[in-house]
Length: 261
Image (cartoon, rainbow, N blue to C red; front, side, top):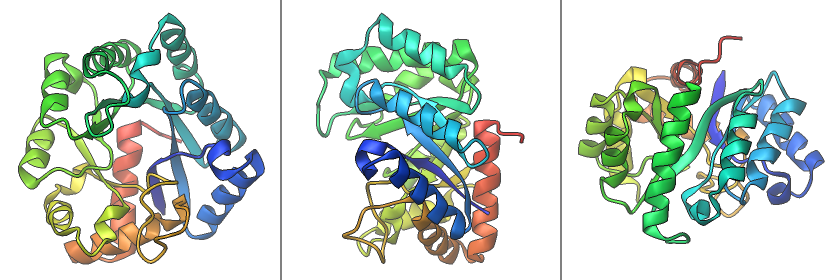
């Protein structure tokens, strides 16, 4: 079994609810029997869309809810109330992705920091794991999460692109690391080094669909079926079979998201 730990099964991205359902069906046909769709981004619509997709595929698709750092400027009591409401629904397994993005700076940095802190506190109050977005922010995300006591719960760095030292510091705090399709790119030397060093019990894999399409499908829209290619490259790096790597990552994903069924 393969589990795509982080994808965005959004009908406006793929074209319609029917198109999303077809994406899920193709994934299952490729042995990707579980997916976590991320309900952050696209304002608050992303959270509602993620919940709806999961409701249509309760045995295949789990979901998260959160406010992406790009959207920190829309944080409000309404946003908080929506996360509380959806976060208590069947199928919701985490809050996020939340974090800092100083690459695009689509929301003011101080606002990103404050919204990250408020969502960490909310996740801890709801006893929900935390999915992290961390881009071009140095070590500030780790510093904020540590300051807020986030590692009293469970924390996952999605689409990790840091170096080995940063990965080890996160793992030492109890964090999990998810490897994206970037690892399949020819110039992904540092990420391949990281993928080799992640402890067995902290490793997840993802597509981040519809973004970051892995080789050999670069140039086309990404989808969860392609997580198999991530597994193949990471397996080769670690000297195991893709099936063994997929089973290991799926077990870790289930444990991180606390999925028991």
